[in-house]
Image (cartoon, rainbow, N blue to C red; front, side, top):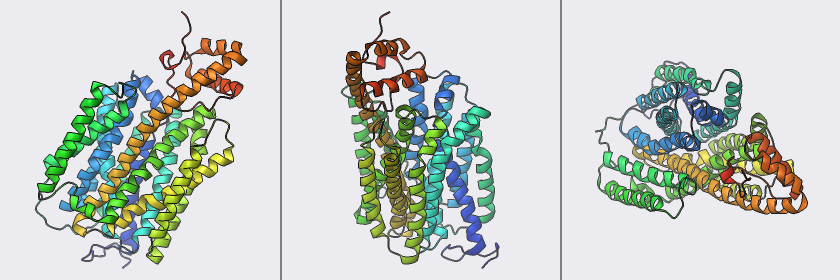
Length: 497
């Protein structure tokens, strides 16, 4: 069983060298998709400035990939139940590669946004299909171990992506943020072609086009509203009523369609399974903790603590260390013992404790406290993120493996997107409150420094934030945190002209 020429058993389980080679290709695919999602984070201001974009362009470039990834996930998952998973994962890699190449060639915001959508569709497919294929080639008892390794890979890509992006932007240019993934994706395609051998069940393909359109359009409308609400338009406005109303109506129509079609995109019968329902709800919380917290932690380190881009990425290592360690260790334990419930409960408790602790952060919070908070939160994410997919895969029928796995991933992505938008809105409101209070105190205690702050205003963003950080310390105001838009309109005062 050590030869690469082993035949695939009837159940599709691989062993020995054949398994290791196939897993290498799968893990490379997952790694490259996660890096692509995170690598441009630190470079986005430079990219938008170079192609002549605006703040709206910035928002849409970021949102395009996450939205396309979220919406595409259940579609890829359902297709995996109907046709060749090997062909699908290679197709996702090709789509991702093309999206990366053309994104790197962008010369204006519209071009970049369009091909970030294409890139996002590939990322969504890889995120869902890698887990589905892994479940087919690995025995149920061994899945925990490899799911843990997959979680560790996601942690490394999440913390390493921004570091790599900053390095490439400072050395060879921001376009290599996109090109760097291309050779890895091409190698993954070749490896999967040579090493991945799956049994494909012959089933009549009936694609639920109506459900796909309604679910995609419904969630897109709601996600766009959550992302743009409060910044591009007021929460109580005609845009809100149109987007929310249209989104809700389309999702209601999608439910009706899914109940009637022969091959629903997301089988509603899955929700009769208590484990699947609870795992889906828990995935939303994990998405908020994983994606939203990572985004705002980087900004907290840069704006509130005055750290550089690379330093801010390195300072989030405790969270990634907790995620990597707990994911790998718990995955190994689950594979050996077959027991998972206690670790899910412990992980959930760590998520709550870590989130509450991080909610107390201020600009002068001791770094040891920040590190401990991140580590506990990372442990919670590591114990739950991939294991939620694992327990669902072990409780549903093989014919629904793709739809169930992708649904859990879909809810996690939705949770991250919604969490980032809601947290950003709350954060922007708190920042304005803190600025008003702090500047009022500063006017009484250090009026000359307040005049210097007004003169500086937002002519130079970094200089402004540095001075504002010093002013926060002078007036003992709470932390100056993310989402401070460096324009005179975002400030509670304006200098006279």
